[in-house]
Length: 387
Image 1 (cartoon, rainbow, N blue to C red):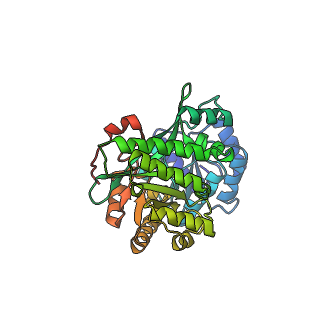
Image 2 (image 1 turned 90 degrees about the vertical axis):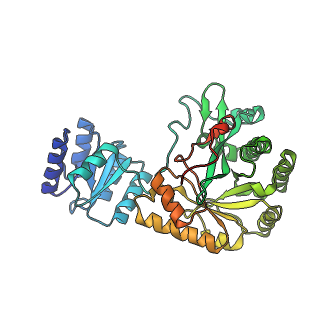
Image 3 (image 1 turned 30 degrees about the vertical axis):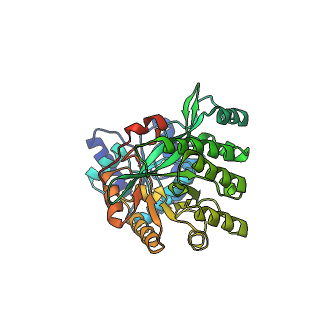
């Protein structure tokens, strides 16, 4: 416990002892660094407002020392200030697991010590992105694309009003013969920097479109792909996508191309014409990660998007953050006014699904309904869910 108020420190320490734990109190970074190194605590509770040394300074020193102990931030300051401090700490590489606003109760302290509390931007992450001892090389990735080892896994999108599965998002997975399933975070950067992203995206799209053309389980469902905007500047890429739709008997209107908002979209004539031609073919365009990237409103005004996908950082915080709920409601209202579909990803629980339905969101997806599954396992995806 790092707090300049001795009375507060004693109260917290007594509460922890009543809960069956042990505790130490300190009043500054030097002392807490010594305690962490010698004692190895399970948690570190840090007050953000101290006259001798502010909490931000302490966090910076903890980060410089490479401290990995789970940190709980405590303060009587506004919660949004605490959340900003938590984001700052995470950008320094610290493990902030919860916020403890003052004054707090014994039950609240017990709960946060027991399970922590995700932040506004928390999102479910895979347990293992890249296997130990495995390095992604351009040669290995190129060979995997040629062998068909980069395959689509599908996550269903559910209609908020009916509960029916109305679409899927295709997510790339590397089926490695030795290391098993490798998540895209381990190889996407290599694909982009080495010029392999176009072939990889087409390989994933072709497999997913082939599945769509041959499955009777979801005959009207849409299929969404993440596409770097740079690929849409290539006429050959979009032409090949449309030819694949024709080859597998999938109407272009069932295909959704998700363009991430975290990348600046070119507003030049060539990009505008390419996106317009795709829309004329019936292809739907989704502005992904809406709310955290570049020039959101300008892109909506100038480019022919048909869908807004709400960033998961807002969705994952909806159950506990009034600000996130207000932002989500505003985005859904904006989509409605512009005649666009609203999609929310990262739905992990019943309360979040219920809130999104009440807010008027059109489609939702997340682990509450189904994790991404291989094409072989799509037979286990239900056609209807309770929202």
